[in-house]
Image (cartoon, rainbow, N blue to C red):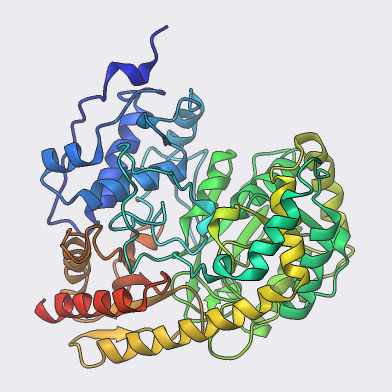
Length: 528
């Protein structure tokens, strides 16, 4: 049979509405997604090169790059060196079954999407404007595939300077990291145990004790290939114990990556309201959920930290209802105002608890390691361990040994301190840059990889779309655009009274470029 990729890219019929509030990258991603779901684009077939499609649609190349990278992150597309970008050959009929699920409605504060419900399609996930981290506004860099080349086979484009989710990766340039890798390579002739290298599990447990306040033994740690893989492991383990399709609650607004993983496993998705302090624990549904995904230390994207009374209310509710709480701990260590907050797991019962913490090294070391961990109490480990034993470890022994040696030196904690100082300085710079810009407010945040600019006034939503569109344009100074994301794209469901604004990242190694990008964005907002 002829390789579908060798038949050339399909002709795509796409219409973009420049007057719509939805950003152009999100519109394009939704159109491509729908074409794949309807089998107009088939597994293994090529899609047009980014430059060619951008020229045909009359948009900046960064718009097409952003849409493609979003779909790569979701699993719809696949990039290969020398072959360009293809519809994922492994999709088969699975993706159509998931995508046909639609959205179901319910009274109250929870709304269901996923494997059952009406045919109304879900809103698009947030779209990163310009090339960059591989999926939009991503505070979890390890969850994004990073092709070695640009999507059409050319040399990789530079990261946009304000792309959310781009971490500072200074750690990889320091002697301690390089020494850890040299030592690990010398021991490369081994296979790691399914649950992870014992040395790495011990070091992670110690790191969590020192930084996150969890006094837990190494046996409670399981090494993962990142947060998404860890969630997939948990969903696989729980899926055989509940006797029905899983129902997963997610914060709304919130980051869509883990939500998408749950949907891929056939779960129904229930959106849960948040406010300035995080998840509204007083509006949690009774008798509906199997799992709930929360970001208690730094809610994404609005930045709230769940207060202790709400944390206790959440845990009491979970114990009463039997719900598993998934603590997405993506950037909790990067607080630049005060120290890191204790993990939610620190309040949980280590023997018969409800909390599984998902962690990653992507935001504190580099996304390139594609490694993380989960922390689970004994009762949930009993479900997870047999599944991991069957599937095996997804992280190479070299990566695990290098991370173990690196943590053992204490250099990770020192690097976190350096990153906090740089983020604090950049946060101050953002506040200074946008002070006095009409109808723009820098949302207060105590940490994290990103900042939020909120817009006010009757035309705030239109201004959001306009700012994202202008910031996506290629210039001599910023060939991949600025990389900002629309704040409104993080709502799973349309909310007429939502806050409008943009999300911008504080990562990237070049301070001069970062300052220049802020100045460019400031001029865009002042002119509107």
